[in-house]
Image (tube, rainbow, N blue to C red; front, top):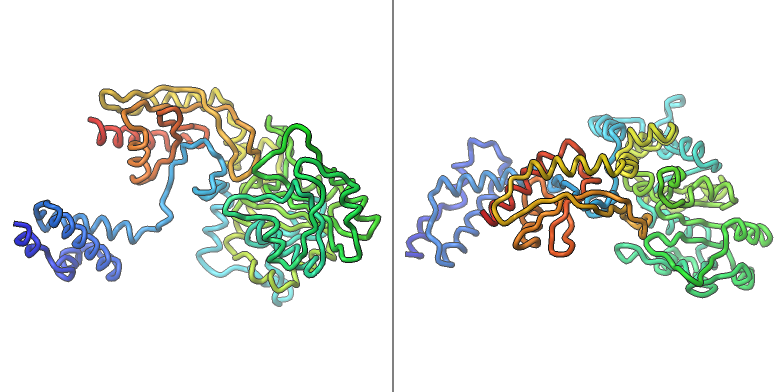
Length: 458
């Protein structure tokens, strides 16, 4: 019987003819048909019976449709992690999305000086914003903060020593390590102090005629507690001035506003570092600033000019899409905090009161249609910033918990659907934290959870 069913399988060409009316690109239709026929052959060899040709055509059409759509599929982020790296970190403000659409559909003045008609600097579009908000003399932008750190070190310290505390030799996601970045940049790392405590005298004793810079690195995704201490930036700057050595401050997440105004722990801002005398400050554009992936470099003009002219700057430069989204995002920080909380998704999520989130969680719980043996309840939860920002700071939130026979199976089913849904599994229950789920996705999330649960246990 299996051999007879195998002989009934259509050829790729025959199945493609059945898709002809659906106007799929030829290459995608061929790939979808081949995939469906291969899967059907395996199913028959495993003991299954042949399906009607129309079922194969419908499956091939669905697969061709998925192949034709972008592989960057939508995700309902119900993890409660606001800056989730796997999901693209920050949700861009509407103004940034509009700017992206505008420049993506045609030509734009990326490196064109309007007045002279000559070639200009592409980072001029955001330099004035960065200098206005931070007090720096000059600024440039590269593709991310890892690139910014490497470029700064290569331009300012190649072949020379950079002094850094042992307690700041961080590793962040993707095995990005400060010692390895220094090695790649050509700078020579001179580590001082101990893991938990470094003193100003440690830096001073390490200064030689081969010292190119002193460096401070924000701990980002970890904290050292207890008997610990580090040298304040202003003291490092004073030591640097005494020896004629610049200070590089790698802030990592890179805040532009005082987060304590939002009820969160204070993080050093870029403007703070400039005000305290750092020669060059670098940070991410897609973490606490909530823009597109970018590495921001601000500081004294003499160093920024040197950084711009370094060969690596071209290798790490950003495109028109990044600049358009970044410019629109940065302009929001020119407004007051209330405008930022209203118009920037990241700051709207940070500042939303728990009572408001609980109302949304109750609405979700009431909308989910669940089979017998599966229950939903509204429970307190903890949200987090994510992406190495404020790693030990929980933000009170509310979630809908789903108690079911197999939370892992439910999570798999939710991941595999469209839109994909990501939640958390804690204490043998599936949690959908509502801080990161906007109102317009509540009904969709209810349909996905109810549908997945019913398919598994109805």
